[in-house]
Length: 235
Image 1 (spheres, rainbow, N blue to C red):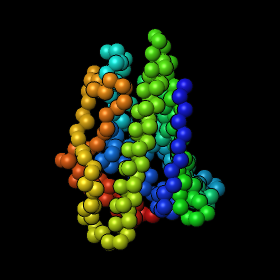
Image 2: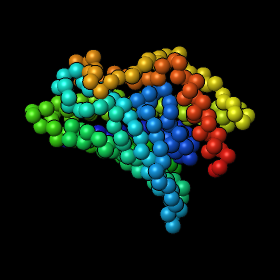
Image 3: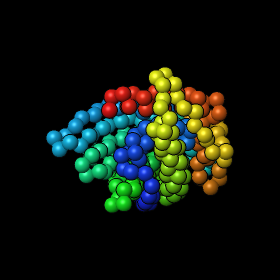
Image 4: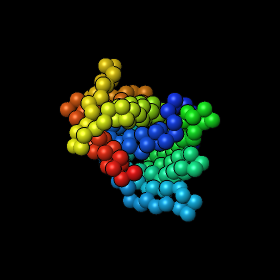
């Protein structure tokens, strides 16, 4: 078993960071996310909002992995979250439902507001493999390296959504339109369509960076503004 823990401080207040976190899909740093659906949402007597989402993700095997280790590249992930508007925290737990014998990743994220009004994000994860055949440690080490890269991309995605939310607050948005954001010039987007039988070209086992292609930029922007507009209308 491998364990990961990391904290990060956002300058934005808890309410804005929490909104960006739940609106993070789609974004160009999460091209591996195929779909995200709410399957349950209800409010507790204490006022907390509990949500369960199913997320479908696409992955790739490292080059050293034997053929047929997994039958397909996609994996379902369940996400269970609690939003406490009074305690000002969000707790989110995710784990994969497929390929659990090869590797299971159980992740917990906590967003809390500090006394100075900023938001602290704490991420923890346990990576476990029960594959055996003398490959358990290598699979877990690969999973840890992959998860570290995922955390960085995830933070970049949330930061991008935060930028878009700030723009929306500064510039009123007309119904059916969206603001074209200024994307930093160093952000490059490349296609990542990978079949289940393909392998990563990285011999060390690290996953290649996953970004959306330039042709899909308008697509994810349109989806984001559609979701944001609905959120603004009904909340």
